[in-house]
Image 1 (cartoon, each protein chain N blue to C red):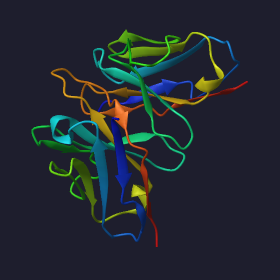
Image 2: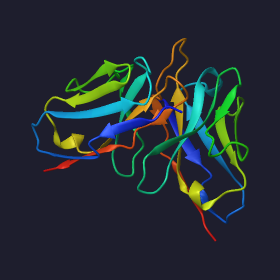
Image 3: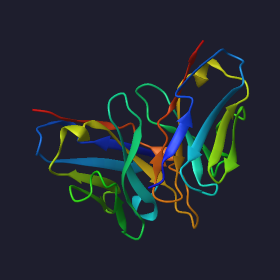
Length: 120
Length: 106
């Protein structure tokens, strides 16, 4: 079965760090474009970051310089290292897959999400 | 940055109604637009990609149309399972979501 399972969320103080994990099954993370999308409580969806199959990474301006996306091919797992966390980073964080395609494509597989709360 | 604007923000409808949601892009995105459905406490689910292509397993009552800057999602006959929030997303230049349209029971 193709699925994504996020872990690592929790309560963290402002300025702290947290690493989210997204374990994939049923497909290979390194062969796909893998992304993080977040959703603040009661709000809409916000794209956060993406890593291409070739390793190129992109970030939303709101997290650039603070968040780092990476993957471990041996564990078939995607990561999001979040540093210098702010209250406005409080959200459910979803990982999502963009299938390998020569043309742009949508996010077809999503995890169930992990909640990150930044508060003192 | 490309901005995506959905309308309406909330839509009240009855089972069996034909429902249309509009999404406008701040600049042309060709047909690189997706629609997602999200239910409370759940992850988004891909319904439509490339503006009008139905994702595998999605009921045929869902359809999408448009290109350039104006797009629509239509539900031909609203079913009880369709009450949810719907988001458009452009993926022409990075990735941007609309603010969402909540479809609620009238």
